[in-house]
Image (cartoon, rainbow, N blue to C red):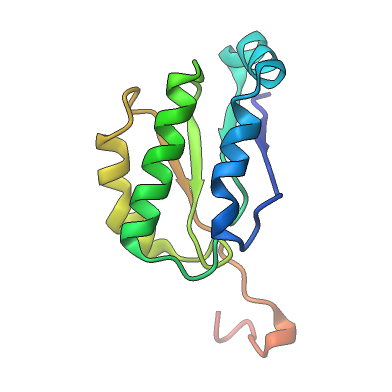
Length: 126
């Protein structure tokens, strides 16, 4: 079993991305990551940001990845799309840039495909 550990403290709130990285790079957290790094994936943050520009997405996640790698985190890092994880377009447009700027070239991207029925979506529209 390979666990994916993630934080939900910034869901929908782009301004909190750096606080997530502050957590991941704490000494006590780094010790746990190092202990289990052979079988561990880290999702930096669940669905961080709602509407985020491509420039902000690139800058924010490049900084986050750089800080985490500099702190000694070398496990695969997962990045969700913005817009509550649903924006696949931003992942497709920014993903290559982020991979190129990751010293470890070890990123994964996640898009959340959900269409709640309470918003009027049906099986036919999905």
